[in-house]
Image (cartoon, rainbow, N blue to C red; front, side, top):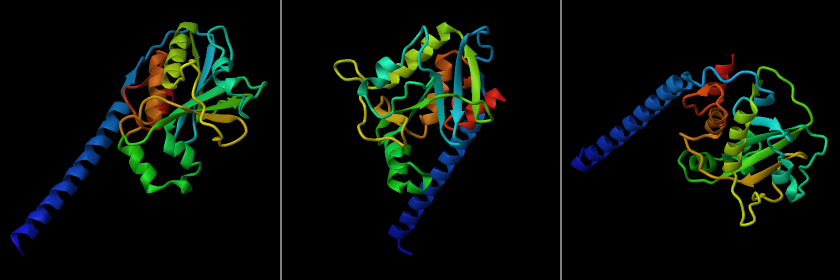
Length: 227
């Protein structure tokens, strides 16, 4: 076997070992950091009900459409999209990779190129909003009562996740939705292995001074603090 071929095999072997080591360290950090609780004793006596909602993979934050702190219809409904619903009481906010959101309505639609771009910080992001007439608590939808001050901080965090035009209006992504009561908007930051849709939701809870993981990329890392 020639020296060049041996050198190539060594390079490939080292590369594979580096990938394995990276995956092992990443998974170890996921397990450890996801189980470290921050804001373990949030302020009690809140009168604003919010929800964390999971579909088993992705986490949304649900907030009241209108209250004394914020009227979301002034920001989200100005586009006059089909996502309006005058009888809705709650609005869900989710952040994620734009390619995942728009090109992968079902997991069966997932392309390798979309996953690669998302994992390695190559794509752009989007905010997804959805209207709810009512919200039902279950194992994947947890109700949290927070103070108005904490809710103000949550509103600030969510608002800063959107991109805005010169008129300070959110940037609607036209003609893109999953159904009758949702819409997409341009968002800040980029998705990666270290900042996922669930990292965004976990950080939303941190911003609201609620129980959360120190860091987590998956929805279980959030819900483990509410069991």
